[in-house]
Structures are given as structure tokens and as C-alpha cells.
Image (tube, rainbow, N blue to C red; front, side):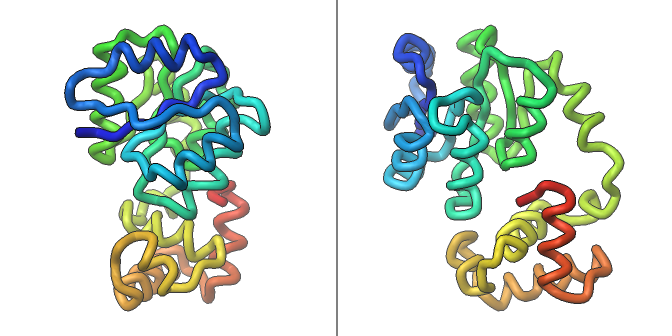
Length: 204
């Protein structure tokens, strides 16, 4: 059973999403603004968050920035009426694993939730092309494994190896090994330069 939190400022949208979920998806909570969304993510630790991009209190990006470093196991799927390039890129850079528009069918939304829960990325077909274009051309980042990217984001944000290990459910020694691999692959001398590198690419 996939535990899902639905975040949208319109009650009718939240009800509609709940009605479309299948037997393998359990809607464990709802939220209507940034504050309630952050609180719900922390309290419920859902598997997947369906996240509206435009929310009172700062928008979906604010929710991602407040929770992704703290709870990297939670997957976020943006669900919005907007297909504007800047909206899509902003939430993907902040940590969302996919982006679909509210024109999506119930069956496709369930498929998107399953894909994101499995660790894959998922985009509405008409968005996939420009998302790939936007993230193409960074060979340094492409050299890192998914786990190394997780470690990079948390270490660059200032967490200790022990704290990173606790958040990723791995040992501090394993984190240290991944961090060393990241520094080697990116040809960076230390964590300070790693943080600067990550900020320049808007990974933090």
C-alpha cells in the first residue's frame, strides 16, 4: 500500500484526487497551504506527496525546501494546472521526482504515483522534452550515482556524516565513502567547495 499525502489549496481537487485512487493507494492526509503541508509531511512521513505548485504561504517549492533535506525518503510528485517552464523546473530542482498537470486521467495519475514511489521520475508527456533539455549538459552531475546525489545534497546543506546516515538509513562510514567519491568525481577539494558548487547549480 502506497501512503499518499495530497497537498492542494482547493478542497474539491483534494476530494477528486482521493476519489481516483486505487486499492493500492492510501490517502493518509491532506493539506491546503505551505505550513500545513510541511507539518503533515513531518508528522505522517508519507511515501508520496502530491504537491500543488501554487500554494498560499510560499508555493510548492517552499514545501520541498523545508522537507526534502530532512526527509529524503519521501517522494514528491507535483500536480498543477500550470505547465509553465519556470514552475516545472523550479520544483524539480527543489527535489520533486515528477510533474503532471491536472488534466491527467485517474489511471495515469495512479501510474505516476507508482512510478515515483518506485524511485523513477515521471512527467506528463508534453513536459518531458523541455525537462530533459533543461537538465541536459551537466556531465559532472551525470557522473554521480543516485545515492551519491542524495549524499551530495545533504552534505552540501551542512549535515554531518552521521546526520546524513540517519536520514538515508545508512552508516556514517558509508556516507563518508560516498562523499569521498563525490569530491573525487567532481574534482573538489573539500565540503566548503562542494556546498559552493551545489548552490551554483541551484541544488540546495
